[in-house]
Image 1 (cartoon, rainbow, N blue to C red):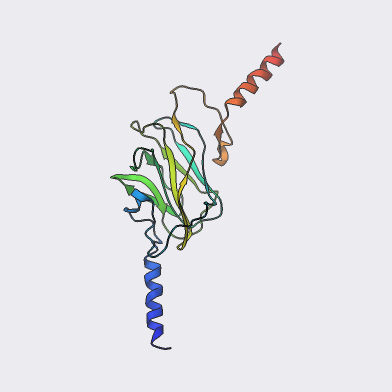
Image 2: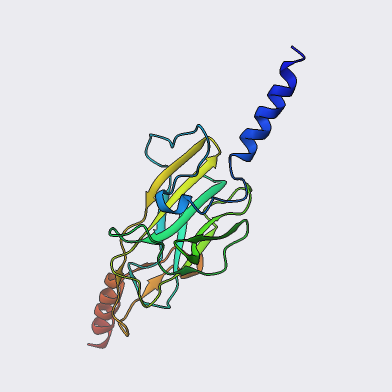
Length: 197
């Protein structure tokens, strides 16, 4: 039994090191796979949703992205289009316990975890579309609850390029969970017309 102890300790060290506790490796950007040796993604539907604060984007105007679901420890998050796996735009200063990850030559092209501290629904990521960001775009994430439990291809809804100078009214912006509400504009105009005459 005693000869097995060093082998067991070595196995534990190898499992810890191969799990990338300080963030995804750059090579994970292309296929969004975490490179956890001997571990496959969960086959079940992900218990996570990527929520954005807008349905359209304009170059230079931040879009917030929140991962909604159970607490998680690891992530890889980037913006892309259907025609390319290249990371688009850049991310603002990453929230605590996360960091930038260079993707396809873009030093701020993705966000990954900086440690295995728990992250949750209050962790909000901010993406800045560039002038060259094509339309439509969407966000893709790999989310890990732990080293052996993770989901790939967690996808947001699609965002299209908005018209500069257009009216975009958002609600709930203070919580980072805003969505455009064109119906709200119509209802407000209707109520104002009713009051005026």
